[in-house]
Image (cartoon, rainbow, N blue to C red):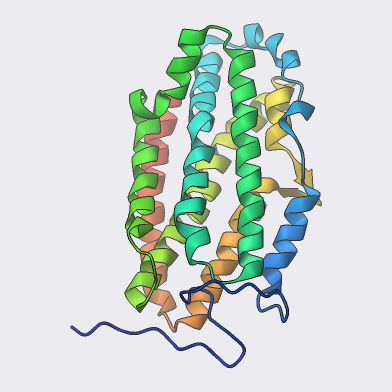
Length: 272
């Protein structure tokens, strides 16, 4: 079967995934990405702003089941944002040929670094014992539900890792599926599913320090909601630019989500 080639650049410039590295912001081809970048900058915060020590008084108030829940959440958070960062650096930034798109990705990478720093502080505060902290950081290897999540992520990171250029529609299909995985499944289900437990505890006046990071808002938007929104914008742009059959990608997206929901159901059973 002959390889299907991609559309050629238009008179106004390269398409979003054309090989190369456009550097000029004017004329701006994708202002929606720049708007998301500006929204993200308004959410700037530092891990040192969050006082986690107030949570120490709450931890003894939790039941054994709730402490187990918190330990699983913290173990997942300890490595989840690092996985997202790896995909940003190894795959997305490399292939997005839009300076405003890369501007947003750079800001998201800063945000992921903030999250990683925050969870480091959280573990140091919640778990004073060094051996227990090491076990929490190794959860991606020794807790089955978290290991399955990581394997799911690594599968889609690896699907693009060897591609240095996206020359065909099949190449761009792989990029789009990676984007759907990290937008809908990881940002939209992995993290939001975990946040629901945090909100439950916070609604009872518990662990407000942990809840402070998850409720970082600007104009009612969660930071991770910005990441999800930006990913979905890129999906729409790619579908429009490449003449891809949306019904086909709808079926593929549903399959990815179905796998992810099965994994989340197993995670919920293990937590509870």
